[in-house]
Every structure is written in C-alpha cells, then in structure tokens.
Length: 330
Ligand SMILES: [Zn+2]
Image 1: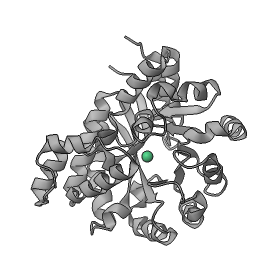
Image 2: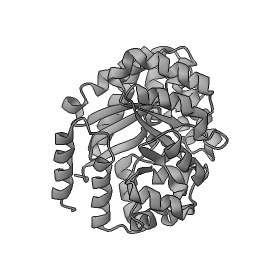
Image 3: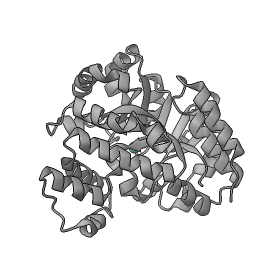
C-alpha cells in the first residue's frame, strides 16, 4: 500500500480519461473528433500549454448532467484511493461549464453526489474548491461567486487557475475580498509560469493561505524566507511541470532544494489524465528521479495533511498524521 497522503492540487476536469470521455460522449450524443480511445490517448501527448488547454476545453463538451460529474469524480476517487490518497481538496472550473450552458447547480450537485459519500465509498474525505479562470474578467469571477451562493455549504474555498502570465493576482482583489467575507478559504495558482512577484501579490493582495505551484519562489530569496517563516504551503505538481516545460526534466526539479530550504512543499497531480500520472505516480517519479529518501517522502505526506483545510476536523487530521508516522516503506 502506498503512503497515506492528501491531494491538494487536483482539477477534476483534468482527470477525464479517454475511456470515460468516450463513454460520456456516447451517453450524451456528443461526437468527439477522434476515431477511438487510442487516437484520443495520442492527442494527450500535446506539446505545449496552448494545445493542452485546447484539448482540455474541447473534451469538457462531454460533461453535461449531474450524473456525468458524479461519474467523473467517482473515477478520480477510485484511482486516488488506490494510490494512497486519504483526503482530497478538489478544484473545479465553473466558468468553463457555465459558458457552454451547464449551470453551477449541475456541476456542484453532480460532484457532490460522489463527494458526499466519498468517505464510505472510497475511504477519502473531500473538500471542494471553486476556481476562477484568470484569463476571464474580474466581473465574470464576481458573477461566478454570486452564482455559487446557493451552494456554499458544499464549497470550502476559492482558487485561481488557467493562463497565468498577463493576469496578475491583483485583478481579482474584489472577488477574493468578497469570498473572504463569506468565510471561504483562499488559494491561487501563482509562480508556475508567472514571476515570483505574483506569489507575493497573491499573499498580500488576495490573502491566500496556500500557493498552488509557487515553483518560481526559488528565484527570490526574500520570498522564500517569508514562505518558510509563515509556513505557507506550496502545492507542487512535478509531472505537470515537466509536461508543461516549467522544468526541462524531472531530475532538475527544485523540490529537494525547496525541502532543504525548509519550505512546506506538497506533491500533487494537477491534471493527472493529461500529465502522465496520479499523485502516487508523482511520488514514485520524484522518488526515483530525485533520489528522495524515505524521510523526505514521509515529510511530503505529512506536509499534505498539515497544509490541508482540515481545521474543521482536527481529529481526522490527527488520525491521518498518525497513519503517516506509522507507515512502513516496503
Ligand atoms: Zn493547477
């Protein structure tokens, strides 16, 4: 059994495997421009961010009903459970669905049909984090928050994702303030392709409690010192970084140096159907490519629960942390 861990950076739309995409397309009468799952699997070997995003949005067309979102989430949870995930904080992108006529309620209630029973069915506790697309307008983000108001009992926090450069955190100051006033937790993608200054801005202007990616903090020693001092977690996604060329090869990933610096790093899968693996695969990959010791792997697993939004259930967090400490590597 893999080491118990939490997954904190996972886009549910990025878990759509070719087999499920074809099954949902058939169910909904959607025609995909690929001959079969094998041809689609080949399309997943995209070359850059834009071709990934094109495919990502194209395939979302198969997600139409509550049952589709339920099936998507259950497929992810089953795979995650097999890789040792005990707790998952799951991103979803409502704007991408609303734009094609699928409303907020269908998305949230559909996901909840799986998440509400995930403890019983998969042995995984879950939280839901609603992300805004940063290449859409600030007004659109605010409208999305408004549309989510009837469903806030299902939603733990907000995030910010999609194309980073040219869309600095400050653009979303108002919507983050409004979300904070509603009691929502706050995270944001920052410092993946964007500069370290975006990380600082996400902390100072948006009040984020956790930084998604945050990889480029290593370029700013003062920022690193601040992240260490304030125990701000980073949700790193090593296989994603290789596929989207944030690092050339996994062996050059700064994760070991970041851990040595005392940063609260976690390892996650981002969009696992597209980026070559789920979170356990990411653990295995960094272990072999970077030669991480068992102590380091245990630290990463421990960090994932420390960084999770389990303040509403500290007993559960303590139980997970005890499982990490008791784990024996084979
Ligand atoms: Zn992401």
